[in-house]
Amino acid sequence: MSTSLNRRLTLESAERTPDGAGGFVEAWQALGTLWAHVEPRTGRLAGGGTGEVSVMRYRITVRGAPMGHSNRPKPGQRFVAQGRVFNIEAVSEDKARGLYLVCHCEEEVSP
Image 1: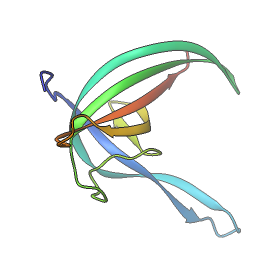
Image 2: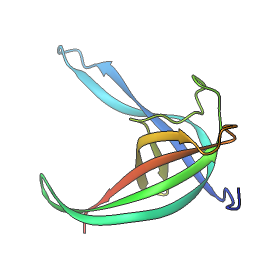
Image 3: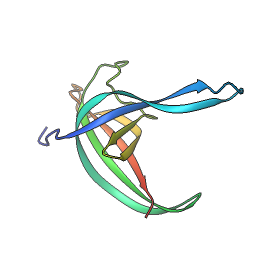
């Protein structure tokens, strides 16, 4: 791989716990820290429930990890770094040997 893994990101997963009133509360739990290469892709302005938001897509590359390992990102999880949140939408292996994983992510920011 010609790009360097030079960004430190925290991988998080949503955990649902009972709220005591028959519902659930969702909280994000850190699974670990990964070094990554973050590459911006496309962006657009979208209408949200509370107004317009800027939606930016990223290709985030991390080292490969075996299936089922806590450090292997999967859709529905997110990366967090310095107040920024990158929601993971899809994950694929970069090459056939699986040395790197490519995470297709989206970040929403209010303009």
